[in-house]
Amino acid sequence: MVETITIVLGIVSVLLAFAIGANDETFASVVGVKRLSVRTAVLMGAVIAIIGGFFLSERVGKTLRDNISPGLFDPTKFPDQSPILISIYVAMAISLILASVFGLPISSTEALVGAILGISIAKGNDIIWGWDGMGKVLITWTTSPIIGFTISFLIMKGVRYIVGKSVRSLRQHEKANSVFGVLLLAMVVWTGLSRAGNDINNAIAPIVPLFSEGGDWYQRIPLLIGGIGLGAGLIIIGWRVLKTLGNEVVELTPESAFVTEGSAAMIVFFAVIIGIPVSGTMVLVSAFIGAGVGMNMPINYKTLRMIGIFVVLTPIISGLIAVGCYYAIRGFF
Image 1 (cartoon, helix red, strand yellow):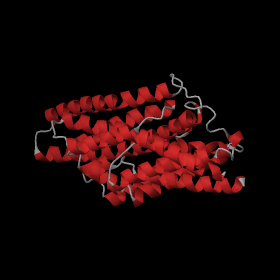
Image 2 (cartoon, rainbow, N blue to C red):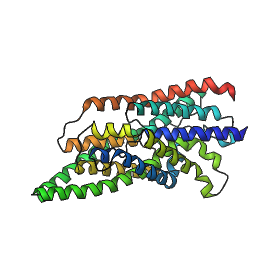
Image 3 (cartoon, rainbow, N blue to C red):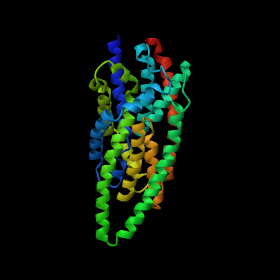
Image 4 (cartoon, rainbow, N blue to C red):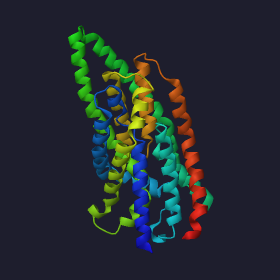
């Protein structure tokens, strides 16, 4: 029975990683400035997702598993916890895939935390609301978009000042664009590695304890599987989200795309290193806006408003779906 459930959870985990990859907007900037085609971007993103998930995921996973609702992911109670795990996965997958079909980037971290909170409240589990648990997550969710906007705006102003002082001819302008294009690709790789380290745990955090009895490489198997699933989702469906964020929020230039990715990379990488599950979506979208405002470019507030609505609704919807799914399937276990 345990072996069968483990296989089922593994399959569902891969499907969820697929859904997260389908909603990954990391490469939107390089698509927006046409430095990479959508096909090349998703293939490159898939490889980076596997690498980042394998090497940068451990600390964020611990926060998600142990510091929000203690005991919710207790491996000693497996397989009795199967309805909880499956409900969380299903809730996240439905939220992410629906948003991806419409090309809207939403936060997989918010979907996971919303599902965890929904199940915890329904079961009467204790929730840590202080700094050691949800307090840290909520403060990060609130401040990271502000930080993303501010850093992106300030760096954009600085870049424009430097370029304005040093670029005097069309040839110099084209050379500057080429330099920023190369720097942009470097920033995208950095962002992709950091995002994978953050996002893959959203898919595999609950099943990591099932691989705890073994060596270091054995314990990393879920990370590798999650990275493969995320990469597949990015290739098959993720191009829709790349086109939306890369083309419909603000018109990008190589300079603004570089600033956007650089700002997002710094924030998400720092959060991954210290183990805080940050919303990479909110950081990247706010960095897009900051760079656009810094360049005095028009912002598409209609698309931005839709993204904002889904940011607010994602944890609520995910929590409700998780609770409904839990009560629907718990009788089968």
